[in-house]
Image 1 (cartoon, rainbow, N blue to C red):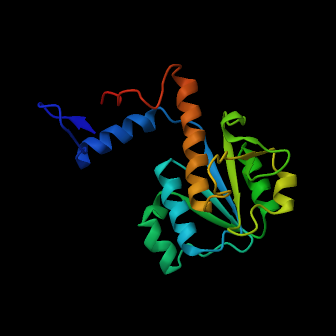
Image 2 (cartoon, helix red, strand yellow):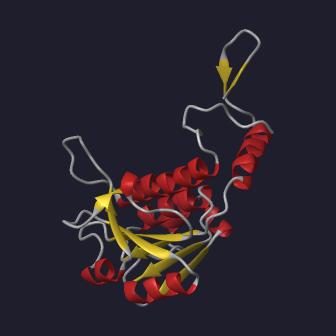
Length: 196
C-alpha cells in the first residue's frame, strides 16, 4: 500500500505491485522447495502450489498418494501458478528426501513430534526443502526418520492443528523472512517497502 497526498492508503496498482515484488525477488537467493507426503485433497494441493509460486519455490516433489495437480479443484485453487514451478511425482517420501539432497538441500519436516523444535528456532538458513504430510496423518514415520530436522508451528490458540496449505504458507513465509533478515540485519516486518 502507498499513501496518497491526503494521507489515505490505497492498494498498489498492477505495475507498482510487480515492481515491489521484483525488488523482493532480488533479495531472495536461497533454493527453497517443498516435499508433499501424500497430501490427498486437490484443493489443498492447488493452494500450496499457488503459495509456493508466490514465495519463489521452484520445485515441489509429490510423494506417495498426493493429489493430481491437473485435477480441476487443484487447478482452480492454483490459478495457473503451476507454470512458475515444477511438480515431480515420486513413489514415496524417501525418494523425495533423496531428490532434495541431490540438489544440496536440507530437509525440514513440519510436524508436531516430541523432538521437534519451534519453527522460529529451527535452522532454516541456506537451501532447504520443507516437507509436509497428509491432511489426517501428517508426515509419515519414514519421512520423519529421514528428515534432517523436524520443526513445528507453535499454536497458542485452542485449535491444535492447521490445514496443510496454511501450514505450508506459514513455513514458507518464515523461511523467506529469515533469509531476508539475515541478508539485511534490522529488517523487520514493519519496515517500509523497498524503493523501486
